[in-house]
Image (cartoon, rainbow, N blue to C red):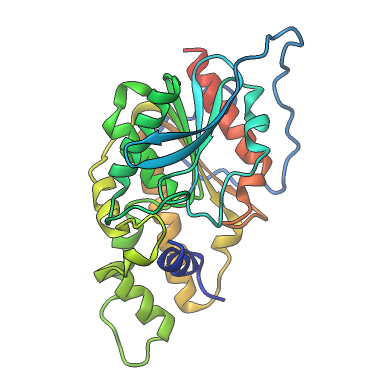
Length: 305
């Protein structure tokens, strides 16, 4: 079995507890439930008036970008996709709109391809312009999956006064590639071919022109490395337990680096926790009730400040 992030990379090449989070002066312990616990959402008043729903395709510069928003109240939850193979599904808005206003969107490249190589910083500028044109104002709770971790970090860096909380769901931390470069070391003749391929991709990059978003992921990772603190914003980092069970020698290099980089991501905030979610993989963790709990936890922590 190839490690998840190799699979992500190959796809990228072709398509590219409670209301208070756990503070940590020292690295917090991992929270590992023994099963998928039942989740009881907060009740929503039956007399809550319906808000204005928007479901439009908006011109943002040279790109056409879909945006869909439901619910009402602050802060607004922004759902950020990773690669297209782990998108938020159509029920995600209803799933979280019980808490407040929630928006999902699609980045440039879905309806019309960019004409030049871009970075995640370019993409978060697109998102901010999209929200502004659509009339959606902060503050925002950012919820991202997979490669969207880079977007969450860079959006927070670019617009720090507008981001009040973050939920990272099996997100790629910016330190992951640097850890792997160190641990994979120099190429050896007897290295498996997939290890040689991945080492090359995280060292010299790949042909970004073949990806519909034309995103330079190595340059974007370096951009996100500039984010050294998320302050005291409430943060939850969720890690898929199935991705940490590999026993093959090479695969374990990847999974160990993944967990270590997730821990480093968690330590960017003074008010955060990290949780391993068992029995879920990189692709299906978004459907775990741990995601509902994490989003609600961060949302309420901000709401009650």
